[in-house]
Image (cartoon, rainbow, N blue to C red; front, top):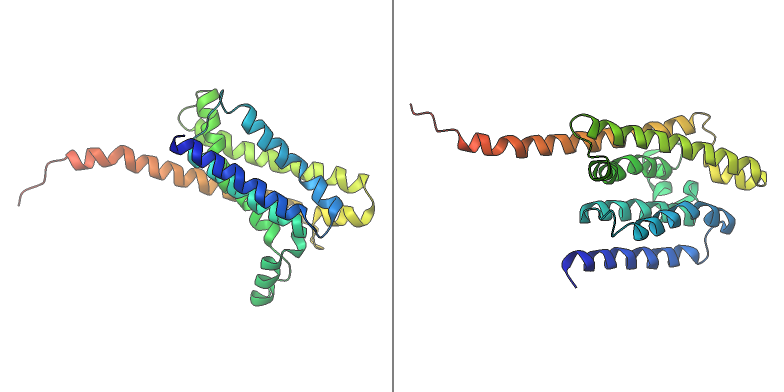
Length: 212
């Protein structure tokens, strides 16, 4: 088994173990079940298209990192994640910001796998290659907020409030979308800078030294 396959099996095993832990005694069983549907669909989809659309090892690591954060969040419900509560108490933030971190991570960690998919599938090049992931993150963030509102209106009120996780902030949905947008912009900016340095570094090294 080559290194890439070992990595993929390791990431998959990690996600299964983490999912098994979060499935045991979650704070809200119904919330955990609803919030776990889309991540499971994503994992199944990645496995199904792996031979047809093999992403880079880095992309799979980033996707697993995001899924791990999300899985921890749904175990506790985002508003009750201990780490977020500890940071709130230490810094007096007024709310548990773990959900905001995950929304930011959605943009920052998944923009590169999206960029890679657009590059491989649509052969996107130039500025479009950086524009499409950002817009996709923003669109999916908006779709997620819509799905949350549907779930909140379809289930009993107590679970609806838990699922939304707004913690009393009337602008929570907009701030979540903005956090994902900022994460995606930061990701593509870092990616563009790294590629620019790689492109111009050989040229700088090839320049003859200027004699005094």
